[in-house]
Image (cartoon, rainbow, N blue to C red):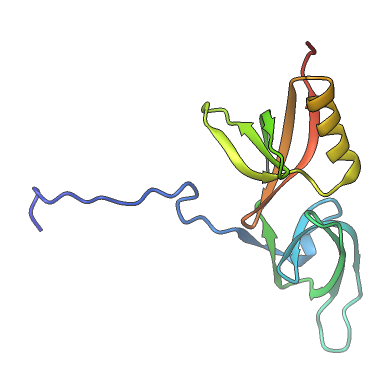
Length: 161
């Protein structure tokens, strides 16, 4: 290869990063995160059984799916690794709400993000629509993302008009 050749690489935002990372089952605690049945979950209950005749102590996890609120359970030997999702929370300023329920958000870099729908949660949905539409308030929406999914999970009002 000569020095004059140029290489162009497609830049990806995550640089090939994994959506999950391994963690030993025995070290996962309540209020942590775990992947159960390929869904990112918040751990609400952990119980560990004693070692049996064949050696392994088992961890029983009860988790709530962070996107749809469904309860999921899993039992894993405490010495084995579990997948733990990378969970990120990002704040965006709300610019507009379209007729079809999509929100237009302002990112930190000044670009717009238009691919998120209003949340399915009725109270959060009403709080966003009323605050923005009827009262004309400036609002910050918190978006939680994990394993390639994103959802609005909280709202804050910033000042009023």
